[in-house]
Image (cartoon, rainbow, N blue to C red; front, top):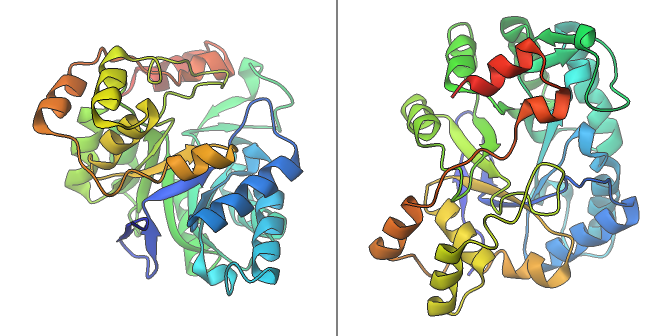
Length: 315
């Protein structure tokens, strides 16, 4: 069964509901990223999630050009490409140039979806984390969003959205937005089910994309609480699936899209084997009782600054 897709508000092209994520820490070699993207295209992926901060825009662009040369796809237009505005370019006057810089990295004329990566701004490019308190600023939500709208109006991005935005930040954005955000990409998995945010976004017509659907194992912020969950492992054993497939299927059944990072050929294929079966009400009930804990804590990335602690406290 192929990967299903969904039409986003204000976007002509439907978005495939499973994308290959490309965030790694430490950063992967460009050739590794490129090889994984080509494997994913061969396996049937048509949505790729990148960001300036991941340094995967360039290898993604190269992989797409190579896939076209090899005849794996007819053109870039067959793909759905998501990238993100980094916090060091979040001052309104920097945003259109930052989008153009990402397009240059990708060797593309447009992205399908451009997201504000985090709800904050740095006054300079960060060379390390955590950062000095004096370079952290609140995001000018109104000004930044007007510049994002300009990216869409110029045709640089077919759709625009946000990432890591709380209900409070979305409320602020929606109060002045001419074009509402199509997507909010957030941490979402069986151990961080985000019910309040999910309900809010559903009510406002904002599609959610789940990152860290497997708990971010092998990252600086994640752990194995999903892949070693007794509840998920027991269900997987009973169903003849992997624990990762059970977790991904649960995320899919929440009506959201998924950005799942893997550079392993077998797991790239395994991660899309979730669309031709369903969890039972009893299994869903068991998963709903998994203890909840946020994995991505901004204070652990940027340092426990007042502004950052406030953002972490928002739902």
